[in-house]
Length: 217
Image (cartoon, rainbow, N blue to C red):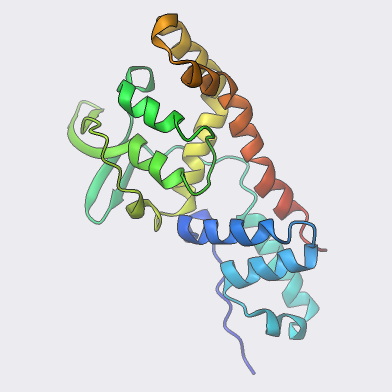
């Protein structure tokens, strides 16, 4: 019997929808390395667990090595533009001048990590490009409308690139935002979220890095 196993070549081959499915399942088996491997092979490589024990050890090791390579990025760049269904979306050009409503809507989720709310955050940060000139671009004004579903099928290279961006720059950026705004204009909950965002983002990276580096050998 021959098996066809789909091995992703990069994070871009894994959608946010699939990532969230994997994340949810792994929470139930995070202390069981064998189950973790089986779940990753099932969701990422579409290999039914019933066939796992029949795979040759060399093939198993190859699959494990490939998963480790793909799922352990040390850094991914922020993608300023993303095209979805023929529409070009641009990342918020100037975070320090982000519309207050957009900023409040992001911080209401309390945590800034790739979870069930992440698609909503991406829908706020990326909006349709309206104009480009001399290397600069403008995007639609934030109206409060969120279309999270369109981000579910976008590759994780885009999502992780955005998360890495905030991980790398959050401390300086958030300090700058706090200094540029009048103290009395910052709601208490918003201020608390800003002050702890750096730690929250950093902690969000521990789960995937720890899980995939502990795949059974």
